[in-house]
Length: 142
Ligand SMILES: [Zn+2]
Image (cartoon, rainbow, N blue to C red; front, side, top):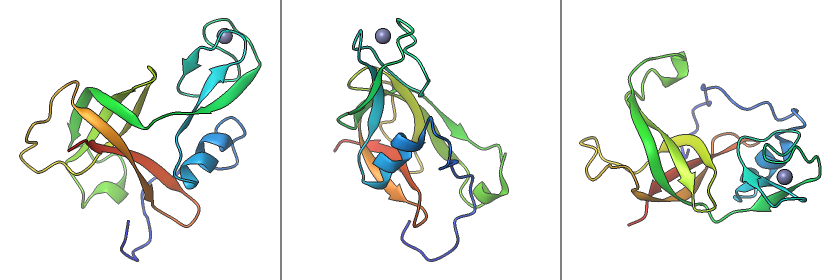
């Protein structure tokens, strides 16, 4: 966000221990996901143990930020007033090159949704929405 208006949309809880490393990384413009030290499984969203082997030794692994669209919607519903002036906006499940899927906004796509399709290749963009919070979003690779 480049304007000076206060950010009015929901923000992550930066004090939550489970997700702190994730938000610290996005602040550095880096995407990280959890990886099990025992079986090397990668997953998202974060959890306190490996969903594959229940191991509790977990590392945060930097990932490429390249992804493809797994599914998406045009969001018209206004669950939060902060989105009133932005509808419709695109919400997608993106599949990271490394496998796990995460939910994020799609950006840099025109109003006609030209070329929007499943498997569209994407790259991450980091949106510094407040001085403390950076949100990952995805845009088509051109
Ligand atoms: Zn594991």
